[in-house]
Length: 409
Image (tube, rainbow, N blue to C red; front, side):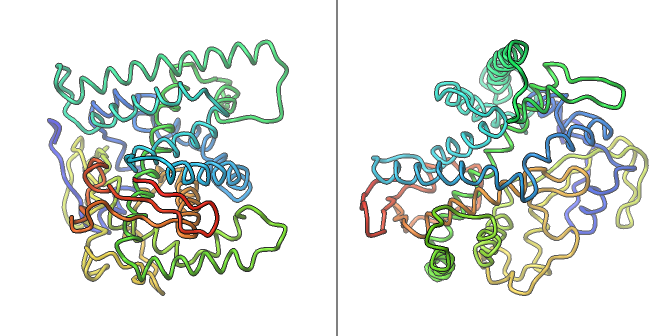
């Protein structure tokens, strides 16, 4: 695979071993991924560096206090986006969802940026992602070549933002409100080392990409699955109506405790994460000869952790291709059996934020909208990289009693 001798691990036990044993395995991403996401990002740095930067960057996007800070912003943007889409002509659902989730992650990392800058960055990320798992062939016409050009544009824009922020900080006194970029600029390890611009930019490239791409796709698929299964839609909608019904009269916005009460919707999201398995594989490399499930993986060999096979194991998930949120009733998967955000020390640090975003979107969608697919006879394909116009054309219809609008999606 990618010019290296490789082993693909497909069982829960083997995946858990490879993901959690940092003494035996290290990141082993292809050169295309390293060059595009950045060698100073999580895909390329040592375990020691990773622990430092992860601790620094995970705190603002995890935990009750941190998530509560962003909920109002997320909800305002979700409500605004749904209302806007319902009044528009035909749009690509995934494209619009990406813009929405990108706006949210930009706010968390950079506080704010102009609409023009956000559109440029999001567009270049789309091109970048086509090359992340491609062969590193830098010739016009190949995905990697186009992705490299996109990376160059992304770095140029982010460098201008970093430079402007450093200049602003030099001229102005420190403020109480700090975003992720401030945290990266203020970071200092035990030896007094601070992050250089190129290191900050690589971390931003990685987080801004991961922070909008996966949540946008999963939100799209969850919406489609809800529409395809009326019984699931009805039960999830009833849960959201009950939450609103029990809300104090003076409360206008969602609270984090209400999201914690969305037990059935959480199962819908987990089932979507299982069926779609957006991040279908990660790459590791054996640091030494290591035994895994009775086999010896030689030092230097690549090890691909194949999440999709774990999530479609009929021993764990009967009828695995069936979308069935009720399978989670009273079921808690064992270690290694459910890995939508990876595992071990390199577990995706934004997993809580992603589920909050998806929950807020589905809450308002279920209460106020329905999606009428453009071609209901066409099959739903379980492919997260399918172009949106191929799988989610339809009509979004506002069904609440006030401000009724129609539009195509």
